[in-house]
Image 1 (spheres, one colour):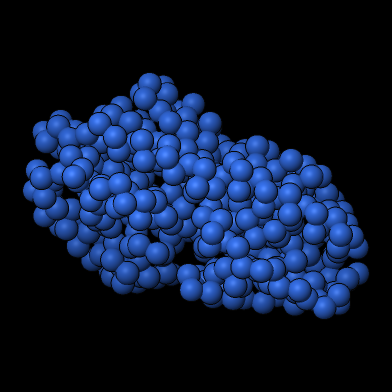
Image 2 (cartoon, rainbow, N blue to C red):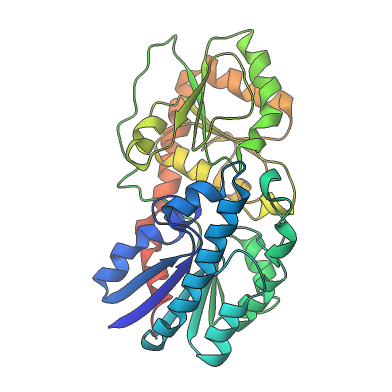
Length: 356
């Protein structure tokens, strides 16, 4: 039996990155006789504190606790065959743990990431500590890894500068779960929606004037499904707390899903999971024409790609007026996910990562 130690930043069932990159594959690894032990840096209490506003002493305490835990976990690696690292072993400091695993313990490393994590990117509450992140360490972990798994070609272009064994494994959707029957709303009730965490909600800000303009002409609700309320207010804004148990049911109530992004190197490294979630549920999707979104969405057929506020306004209006168009786009979007971005399609390639 192959034994794997899996290091990740966050507790299970919380972070989208982890849920869509490896958590949904754990059951298949178990079925293949691969024994995986997951070691998150933060526990659930630490996760709740670390990304909240304020509480600096508590955050420092959980960082210290996580580092102590990491030291205690190193000895357990003597009995494992593979070390799987999602993003990083510790959020701050140089890659000391990764170096020990690669150079001292000489373990086989699989390194997985789905963002341009070599670039500085931080929230306001963590701006004082971002220099401790050691963004430069990513290239070294890539170099030390036996195999690197990334979510798109932008990320693979970076990784291949330091390692030839790079696999592009897109962020995928479990279409057997994302299959709740779409909720049929009254003709007068139309819902625009967005899902994500507080770390990405700022991407909605350029869309706020568009939604305000739209609210003067048509009636709709704007639903934000997240772990924190959004930092803005518009007419008919509804905040829905994110819970894994209700996630699919809440998403299924949307008439259209939106994924606005800026166009920069950080967003080009994103893997489009919001769009994929919407599309898997037959929700017509409008996304910014950025990065992997241009590969996922065939404009006008499986969704819509917007570049300017005027295009966002026009496409939202078009979907409101033409419900049949939204229905056909939603159906085509789900077909795309099932054929090209589903767990079922990629699970065999994923399992190959762990083969000798």
